[in-house]
Structure formats: C-alpha cells, structure tokens
Length: 151
Image (cartoon, rainbow, N blue to C red; front, side, top):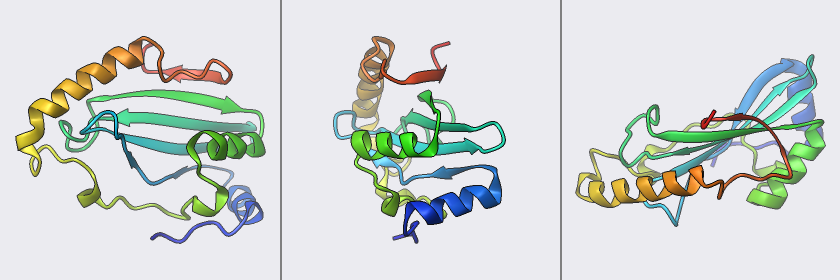
C-alpha cells in the first residue's frame, strides 16, 4: 500500500507547499461494468481557490492506456473541507486513504491483451455504461459541475 496522508493538516501542508497540482487516488474496478475502472483525482489551485474532484470512468478492458474509452465529470468545491467531506461520504475515502503519491498496479485491473477472451463482455459493458452515463445516471445535480465529457 502506498503511504497516505496522516491527517487533514498534512494534506493541507502539501497543498500549501505545491499551490497547484493534483492527487490521484487508487483506481477502482466497477463491479456493475466489467472491464471498467473509476479514476478519482483531486485537483487544486490554491491561488485561484479551486478545489476540483475529477471523476473518470475508463474502459481499461478495451483501452490499454485509458486514453480513448472514457467519460468524466469534474465538480468544483469552494473549499478543501467540502471536497473531502464529499469524497468520504460518496466514495468512502477518508483523508487517511489518500496516497501521498499513487502508482497504479496494472495487474489489479482489466487489460485488453491479458483479458482478450473477455473483449465481448467488456464491449457490452462499455456500451451499457455509455447509455447510463448519457442518461445522467452518474451525475450529481447537488454539485457544481464545471466539466463534462458530454459537452
């Protein structure tokens, strides 16, 4: 397991030091969409007072590098505490699980070469996900949406 922030104070200290950067959280396999993962990134720009949550749904099962088959939303929060509260409430990720630096362990996720026998299943799941995404199933209207891959 990667080293994580010990507290909100240590996270704030990192943000103060870097001013403008991002923190990538561990990818999650999507149980309802085989072949897909959710990538969660905290993006911050302290001078602009922007705290964004970037959510990317990626079909690793068909897209080896996750560059082509993806959809995403970015939500903006007025402060870090609000973003962290949402992250914990919605995704069950407390500060103590945010890695200092994340590196992906690709063996944990679908791969179009290694899992070629599942390509049809992955394709069907991607198509179903696309329909669900376009219908707004994953959109949280209670949040300030600043980017959507549908735009």
